[in-house]
Amino acid sequence: MHVADRLLRLLDPARVADPAVSEEEAEMLRMRIISSERHLSRPHPRRRLLVWASAVTVTAAVAVAGVGLVGGPAQDSAYAATPAPLQLEDAQGVPAAETLQQLARAAEKGPTPGSGRVKHFRYETWSLYTRIAGDQVTSEVVPQSYETWKQPDGSIRQVQTSNGTSTTDDFPSTDRPDPPGDPTPESMKQWVLSQGDGTGAGAFLNRLNERSLDTVLTPQQGAGILRALASFDGVEYHGGVQDRSGRAGMAFSVDSDFGGLPKKQTGIFDPDTGKLLAYEEMLTKDAGELNVRIPSVTEYTTHLSSGYSN
Image 1 (cartoon, rainbow, N blue to C red):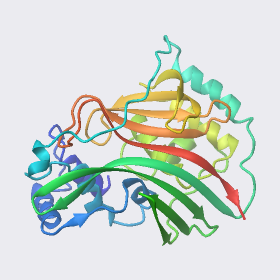
Image 2 (cartoon, helix red, strand yellow):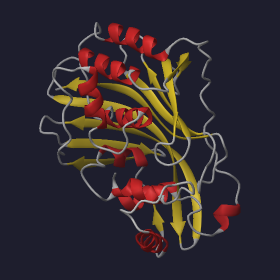
Image 3 (tube, rainbow, N blue to C red):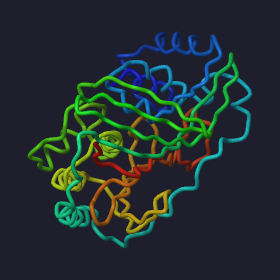
Image 4 (tube, rainbow, N blue to C red):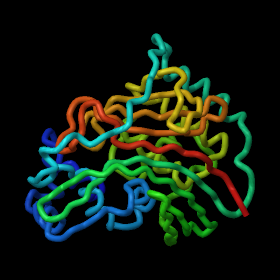
């Protein structure tokens, strides 16, 4: 489990004690956060892209999840505004596993992702994060868009746009493994889950979203992903739905406590190619220390395009 994940779980009142991070360590981190004014100008999903490469995410991740972490006016203020939940359909008992297998058969007949030396991605995100100044904690909601170029050596250039302002960052290559060249459902499952916490369907959907930020899959690899998802218990099919970019897709969800709080995690897949179009998380029972109502969407990602360029 990542250090950031362990610290985030300390914020969950229903958590199981984690011996890897003591309460004293968490308190020391909390005091470092509130000792000076700190504004999170870098969004959560960009940090995810490099979460395996650096430990700099720890402070940001705790602050993102820490609405109401310390006493202050934010705890008594109105709830933070969050997007309306997706309008998921009742698929009337249509089995998710069988539907995913059908989608996998269509996906492996899909077009190849093209050619080129540079992998190119565009995606948009929404996240709830926080400004901490002394003992005052206030939440902020800002949508962000990203354009990313990944070179053959694994190095990355990324343009992030937020509130009409764009910033460009360059990152070195990481040791993240490439997807299997001869994919099977089991090998794709292990690839998705290989770097991160958890082994269930919730962890799989969360990590698949992260992998999709900088990985171009072949039709065979995409089909393996869908067959891997079909192997998990608890996955539900919700029929057709529009993602937050207005694209038609097929929605699959799982109820889990991945990350510490009960939530519904939903992946929306292209009905023709099987590619992941969008992913989001919605708290369903308990907000913990987060200043949001139940149910509340706390994050989503829409994957607009992925492929190759020269």
